[in-house]
Length: 358
Image (cartoon, rainbow, N blue to C red; front, side):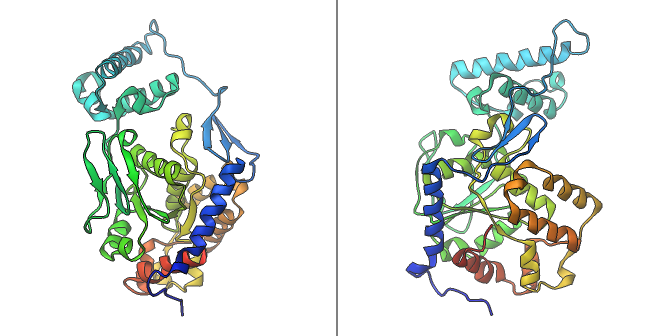
């Protein structure tokens, strides 16, 4: 039978404290993960940062005198002029705001999104430096207080409800926490279940964040900000499937599309807490709670296994190979087959107490 800690005695967080000491020692020595030998198209992998854009990557030329690109050129100038006005007036706008200034001109939201990313990459500045914000979809809860740019004070520990991640993460200040760890949860449903089970209260002090699936820019910025300020251990709780692993990789190593801003978005110190494919076998999760891998899942898994950062993650590789060999995946909700509150009462406390992360 699994050991369940009764209360948060002083020794409960010993493993987390030792892990944090190791992380701080690595930072002071300037040491990250073991070096990787791989590279990818327009990016390179650096263990202390993640995927970064390289200077000799493929470029795209847009000419004002070319019939094929004259419209794109005009749209870039239009958005640059709007950015100039925002910066001059020290005001902010969302990408959605920019699109709705002239929907007929832009056609659709993806055109605006692509141009803004191109401008950010071209000027080599983060998006908030252009005074363009994204609409947040992420949530945060737990032992954290901060003040927003307009002076509003926020306490994330009040009540059983979560706080929306701010649209201007760069503008929040006076962040205060006593948290021992940060838990990044893949799905909103799991996040809400942990809130309903009072996980933050039982495991206090801690912070929980969810990007509700693939994380938006603001959620990634917040996770990075919390790491930079507090250097507390950060863990991911994702489904034991290729999609969940992909989301974890975005938080930890970044994405190709945002590789030009990797320094502001990635947290290579993040560890995989669960759900591990090996946990499925170890806990004897019923087979009827598992889901067969689809052809698309196999393709995604093979793609991740070829990425450069997997060269320095042998334990990750082993878990993914175990998943591929079993041809099965599992959602976090599969743990409810063991008991309705197994995740918050047994699984996570034991993982955190005994160092069950990789």
